[in-house]
Structure formats: C-alpha cells, structure tokens
Image (cartoon, rainbow, N blue to C red; front, top):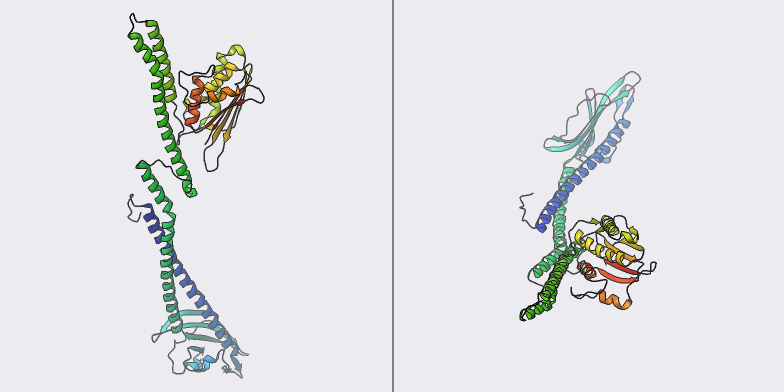
Length: 452
C-alpha cells in the first residue's frame, strides 16, 4: 500500500497512513466549510434582495389610469448614486430605475411572466459581477391587469473579494492546524512505541544471554505477550534444569550398582546372581528416570484438553483392576474444565494419584476438579482434589513424600516413584502440590493447583 514494502517499519506505516488520512480529512473539511459558507451567504443575499423586491412591489401605486412610481425606497442606498444596490421596474415599454443607477452600467432587465423568478449569483456585466434577482408580477386596476417585471441588482465584487479572503484564511489555518497535528501525532507515536522499543531491547538482551525476564510494567496491550514470553522462557529454563537434574539423578543412582558390578568382576568366581540383581536395578532406575524426563511441562501455546474425558477413562481402567474392592468414586468436575498441556502429563498425574487412592482407600474416593481464573489470562488453570477414606498420611511423612529430588532408588513405602513423578509434573507446570487430611472421608487428600 502506497508503495511501502513488507519490510517497512510499522511505525513508518502508521505515521504515513495516518498523516495522509489527516491531511485528506482536513482538506475535505476545508472544502465543505468553504462551500457551506458560500451557500449560506448567497442564501442571505437572496433573502435580502427578495425583501427589497417585495418592498418595491408594495410601493407601486396606480392612480387615475396612471402608474405612480414609488417615492420611498426599501433602503437609503437606492437613493445614493453608485451605492452598489439598484432597483428597476419594467412595465410594457416603460423602464423605471432607482437614483442609485445614475452613471452606472448594470445588467439589462428582461421581461418575465407573472410569478416567474430568476436569481443569478454571478452575472457579469462590463467586467463587474452582480447579484441579480427579478420577478414577474401582475398589477390589477379597475380596467385591466398590468404585467410588470421588477429587478434588484447588487454589486457582488465585494462579496467575492471577501470570499477569496475567507478561502485564503481557511487554507492558512488548515495548513497551520495540519502541521500542528502532524507534530503532535509524531510525538504521540514516538511515546506510544517506546514500550515496543523496550521490548525489542529486552529481546536482544535475552539473545545475548541475559538471565532476566520481562517485567510487569508493560502497557496492558503488551502484557499478554510479555506474560506468554515469560512463561515460555521459564518453561524452557525449567525443562533444561529438569533434564540436567534427571541426568544428575541418573548418574548418581547408577553409581552404586556399577560399583558393585565392578567389585564383583574382580572376584573369582564371579557371582552372576549379584550382577543380575544390579542389572535389574539399573534397568528400573533408567526406566524411572526416562519416565521423569518424558514430562513435557507447561506449554505456552497448546490446545486445551477436556479433563472429564481423561478422568473417566482412568477411573474405568482402575475400577476394572480393583473390581474386588467395589470402590465408589464421586466425581465433581467443573463444566468446561480444560488442561493446557500434554495429555500424557495429565494422564500420568491423575493416574498416579488415583492409583494410590484406589490402593489405600476402603470404599470411597472423592474427586473434585475446579477451574482457576486469573486476571489478565485468557485461559484457565485447575484445582484438583483427590481424597480417600484410607488410613491417610501422617503429618511427619508428608514433607518427605513431597521433598524435591527424591532418587529413583529412594522410595517411600506405598508412595514411591509415582508420587515423585507427580511432583515433577506439578513443578514443571509451576503448580503446587500439598497433602492434607480429607475433612469428609478422613483419609489422605492430595490437592494440586495448576495456574493458568
């Protein structure tokens, strides 16, 4: 558009297009104002001349079969020669004129039929413009009806000079106002684009390896973008840390089995049973750490997954596995509740917690899932509560269960690898996991808060 390439800066595009629109709007406004002023003034001129014309008609008298011309005039200017306003009355071949016409060349009067009217806004005569209004009238006498034409003329030179002065003044003001508005517009554009410049600077700092993320003092229109970028950066950093932690955990967990194998290989004869046990343990450690590493974590741009579908699928599977217990599951899921992440993460999170609940409950499990709404976020978070009527978890054990960095070979009885993976998933989504006592079922209550 306007010859601007796709690589032209947005600031330049906005400034040029808005400046052009402003100039066009002011020009159009100037044309409209000039035309309105001209039409209104000409209307006033016509009304004034019409008043003079009707006054002349009223002054005409007919006495003793003779037409008596008026001695009074609608305005004193008609008695002053060359005053600029002139009156004429044409009856048959007789032409009467006001004293103001003395020594002046004015447009000739042309006969008109009764009630016929002519108004000319610029009638040139001898190089001079005139306003000209004429009308045909009928004068009734005792014997006949006499047809007459009455005309009023006014020198229009002064009017068109004033109109030209008004046009020049209007043009000057339009140019001045346009210039002022353009300057104001450029200042506003410079001020309005400062956050974008700061955003570009922050991005360049991140590209150079800066650790800081975007602040919260950006304008409202950019907060959604900066918040998404912050979450994206934080997710990438958390993912990198999680991978490093997983590798560190894997290396640490494999040290002991490898040391035992090396030590056993030095013995004669070699105890294959011990080596096999250590290999099996190493396989379990690797499988566990791979499972932890597979946690996708919080995704900034992802489609929501209906939670109710995943919950129902997991409950159906676990009820088949634990059919001998006849567990009653009460499920309350908020309408439209969605999980914004990988479906595998949600399956793993709910699957591990519900598997523990089915394992330790007596007869009842309550599942409550609510949506979490946060100002400034378009998508919603989740509040997940899973309680059972089992023995619960002692207060002093809860902190140990939720302790970050529990190794694959450091399993808490009854709540081991599964809960550790749940903790990793919740942390990867910047969420919170807590263990409480269910107020209704009096067993364990796992509460998870996943922010939007």
